[in-house]
Amino acid sequence: MSKKKQPVHCHVVESAARTLLKERGVEIEDVALIVYDMQSEFNDSITLDDCIESVDAVLEKREIQHAVLVGIELDKLAEQNKLSEPLQSIVEMDEGLFGVDETIALGSVFGYGSIAVTTFGYLDKEKVGIIKKLDTQPGNKVHTFLDDLVCSIAANASSRLAHRIRDREEQLREEEIKHRDKEERIG
Image (cartoon, rainbow, N blue to C red; front, side, top):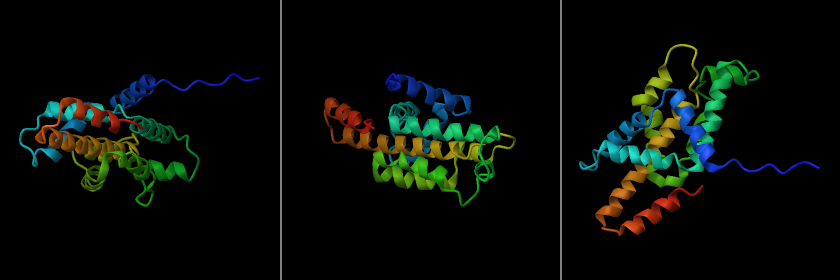
């Protein structure tokens, strides 16, 4: 009789996702700078600290963590030539018609609403900041999935921040804002 496996604790998963991002050259502040650029034109009181806090909150969401773990693992396997052909070549060269990388990243955007979806599309097309660096980095590194995952994280954090700012403008009680934030993190 086999022993039932226990689920991996959420703190372990979050820590692993954050560690992988850092190992792959993505700092929280890199993503926060994109969020700042996306939201500062709509609200001049936004600070980089607000954006960092929003990115951190997004990274607490399991769907984001899972997408990061899967995507980065596939990038790493491609770097090690451990994927079967033709998938190896497709991922390694980030083939233009291969949309699975965007699909995984986009799937984790839907929890933050239409602002996140449209922002993801914009960031995926424009490739700003760290996203551009990942997409164009020369050498043996593969970031086929990672650049899109960073788009997703930035888009989600941007949408989350826009909604928190509106909540404060509407003078919602802090408990209401925390409740809304908690609800967004489910999943």
